[in-house]
Length: 127
Image (tube, rainbow, N blue to C red; front, side):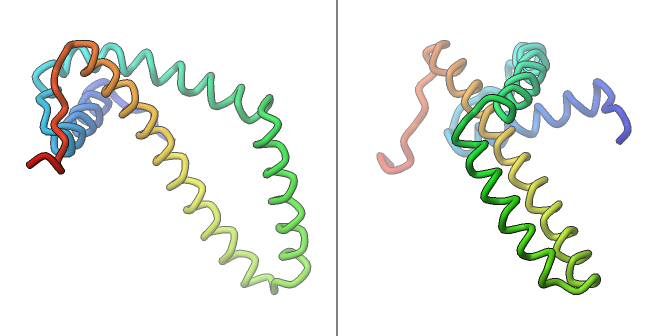
């Protein structure tokens, strides 16, 4: 995987902020430089947290063990073509889950920063 340029990272963060603004009717994109610098740091924190989490969380370890057990059963029942197809499907599912988790982590940070700045987040049900 090619390393992301600063411009590409800045654009991704701007898109994330725009998505946040669309949902919560805020204007975080006006502070894109502040968020860019902080989210870049937060990305490193997230990676360290994720690595530590999969090594130390007991609940995760139990679920991982169950997943391996089910995977072993499936391995015995799939043909080679079915196994290949399932592995592709599973890889895409894992990528989607990782992306969702990472975005939710950043949204939590943006929300905290937004609330810290005293910007009101509008509740769509109030309208």
